[in-house]
Image (cartoon, rainbow, N blue to C red; front, side, top):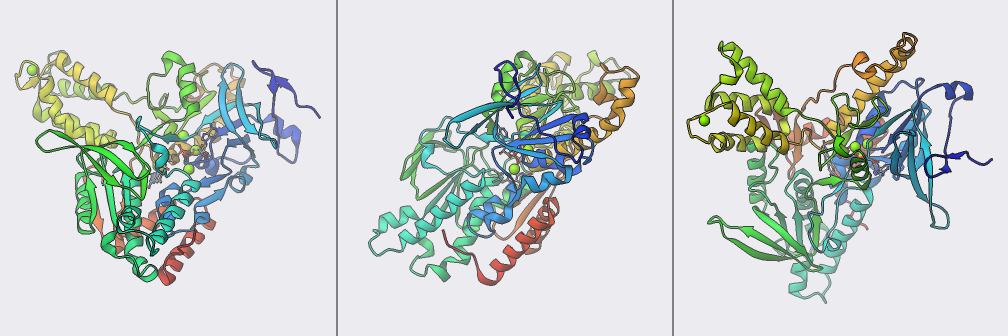
Length: 552
Ligand code: FAD
Ligand code: MG
Ligand code: MG
Ligand code: MG
Ligand code: MG
């Protein structure tokens, strides 16, 4: 049976219907989801099993529980415990899985162009047709144009974790050999993390735990003081997107644990045996430094995938954000035919309209004082109220907020101590261009996936009636369901047998072992399945009883 061909490139067209009754399946809208990560899987979890003909396309045939990935690198958790087969997740909705990579989308033909390598290693391409498409392809590692990254390790995927684990063990083993010189041993045992965000910090903490808890037992020849862990951070503090108390706690903790934190430092190059970086001194001068490396982790933030970049370019003026695909507040991809294509998770951002929300806030303020908005003179204390409002709505703006205070004085050009409307407008434009509206977190991707599931469920019920009433061209999304609203449920980071919580709106907590358990239970609850939960519980128990398994 030859597949039908078509589309702009005349490629084979894949059509699969999974149902007891094929005719029934064919009548359902085809929902195609690109990516089986946090966003895609959250959508699958709450979607009604009977309403759509679902296909997931992803190069990975598993969902990865990323928050626990740093634990897996040092053997605290088994790699297997962090993954959940996509097909298992899909079976609830009778869905179909295609293991391949999305390369392009033909919006006017409603076709996804997909690639895979065949049994001879030759690339093959085909189309997958959709009625509704959800883009949830996540993000890529940001190279920041640094040289020599082939000498660094990344932590995005299960294979990365496996490679890191092998490397750490190998370095410890080589360091023990009688033929290894003192200098070489020092290098092998120098672990450098580039990036002081949650991933880098948690990896450093896990590594430190490993070195402290298991090393003396399993590598008695190694001296603790020969081992060093360093974090290189470009900003003034680590965990700088978190509340200040959290980042302070982390820094104090690391200082006590002898994990070196190098702030205001930029990596220039990673060589096979050393890392070169520049560090800004307190007097403003910049000096170049280097550290020997036995291992270097590169975790300095995210950038768009090749697919995201391609689609953004294709949609031209509708897509102006360099960091992510822009959607409207109903999560519809800007510039694509309305109601066909959605984007969620790390690959996307909701057009933020911070400026709009501030302007409406200012209007209210003006009216409440009985004056016209255009004649409003904003004092610094008013500005702080505005800034608090921004912080509440855009919690990831916390670190920008510290600068919001400075901005006030910067934009008060005539130094009158107040901002007039013109000064305000310029200031708002600057905020708008600087603020990416939503954080790249599992929490956000999960919320957006659930949002789409609930909306799609509702649409499936309503659309027949709507079509019958001939409002086919209306804004169905807005008619059936509310706009997406992000709820910040706080962030957590794990730091050496303790956890720090940033609960937003100035709330933060830090604590000892009880906090670790609270932390684990939060992630337990977010986890996708009982299977994963059980596996992780067993891993933790095993580690508690027997220590980590240090085998490559
Ligand atoms: P992902 O979960 O990355 O999923 C993307 C999916 O798309 C994958 O299945 C991928 O294989 C697939 N894909 C990629 N390209 C294509 C393509 N061209 N075609 C088809 N499919 C494609 N967040 C938190 O909230 N808390 C944490 O503690 C936390 N810790 C983290 C620790 C680590 C080590 C990492 C790497 C991330 C962590 N995050 C955490 C961030 C979180 O994992 C991401 O924000 C989240 O995964 C985003 O979900 P997503 O669905 O957008 O993308
Ligand atoms: Mg996803
Ligand atoms: Mg994932
Ligand atoms: Mg995504
Ligand atoms: Mg002024």
